[in-house]
Length: 295
Image (cartoon, rainbow, N blue to C red; front, top):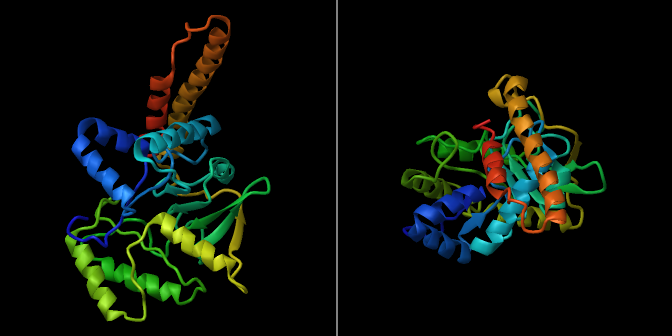
């Protein structure tokens, strides 16, 4: 990013920021500078990217409560775009929780089109009540790139985008399984592709920037009405451990035990002020283990 001022970067997951803050404070300071300059996008609003397939409402809410407070206090940031790159499907109640915590955009990549066919990358996800959340699932297969396939990804995205009415299109790049930062080769390939496609404005942006442009498109007269979806985004990677009942039930017992402990804590606090022990560390442990890959 220092070499190429145009470059932007996005990162969610409050626990990762806190880890950097504790063990690499100089790096944390530099991240703060990039955030303040508008080149680093704090997204997601959660402690980790939590399991959102058969989730616990309490755990999802705690993810936002603890993390949004951390982002505001330590980073001066308040994400309004949720980000679930790799979670194995999403329950029908997820948009209710997103809207409850002020999220007006949601970007994800699973389930992919093979499991949940829908050509438009932009759509509304309707909640059980009057609210809805604007969603984006990119044209490419997922959120990672290999060492040499960025031009192919851009070609694929352009070909798909020409069949859609949306003028603004998002492409996620980052090397390796689960997606790190872009390599210098990635960035060189983007520049070569930009030069070969003068009909396209290529811009390094952020998830918040993408959703702002999409919202602006929706405000224009005769704008396209996005597809509306209601219900689950499910049937993704069936059989993976995160979806297997005998594994998930162990985690679910832990969640319920902690909720019960919180109820008891409230009773003790009401009758004997100062004697109730905080449960912050326990909740942080449960939230950390709600990460879909750990689960």
